[in-house]
Image 1: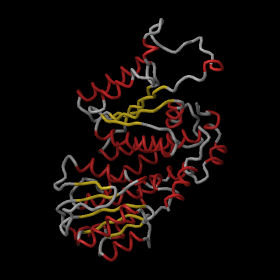
Image 2: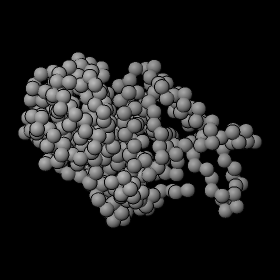
Image 3: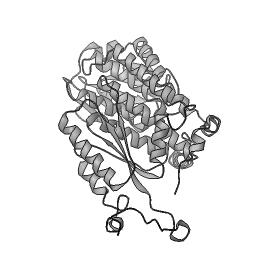
Image 4: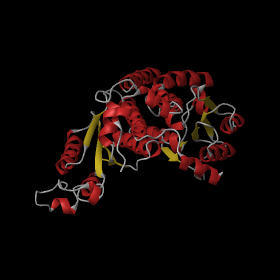
Length: 386
């Protein structure tokens, strides 16, 4: 069973050596990504998306490390968007998409097959197009031929996971222009400031007992993590965190959002990774056997670790439910970590949690002795499917 190495986390030179593609540096550029993307989007003419008129509907296409773009726009648009916003990861394009609709396709490389195919089919049907990705890429070419708006990724990073804010910002600006989501430039400037603040707090030179991302990484080390959001906004952040833990730290992670996930999370507390039936019936009323010898009996089984993401802008009943789930988890003795979003607009609160858990996943990989950007099995998979 792998455990994190705290000494490595407090050795900036060791971190730099293991982090071959500067993932930490790329995550620290998130605030700069927002600012550069605002300029890039304005220069590309984001004001003329869909001819400057509100479309009948919006479909967002992104996958992999870019997938959060879809989830964020859907989340922010749901409460007040005057038109429906749909999400699609791959072809085919829904039959209802036509000349009155807007398709947004996002791919850092501009070559991802799903968004590229959806954009090409949307162009064929005469739908409006907004694309975000590499310049002079197939996606940019499709958009140009359809007379759409293409926004270049202004600040390159080694992966789409670390390029999130370069990809998301132009989409939020377009949504603001069309009246789907209130996200003007001043709000995005505050988001950039929050991302800078989190990056400063989570810098590699900050020691593990004060660096919030390192604290979370150490707390979740050796566990089977469950990331739980206490509402819709934190649920999106939990989904991103689970994806980052799996893809970056190579730790299988589940996620959920309250109220729907309350029962399934609490039920797992009785299972083999929670208190377990044997421990619950033990003579001391639970807990592991203090006389167990790991050399004779083998290593202990991994335990659940709960990371609860909290939104300060929730009604009292939602807060009470989240408190009850956390209390149930604490009673079993599993590691429980809580992180509250910073105050502000919805995108500001979301940004504070996403930035922190992105750093956490990266530090967890490094503490386990893994390069956060390079996976041998992912490389082999690409070779086998190319």
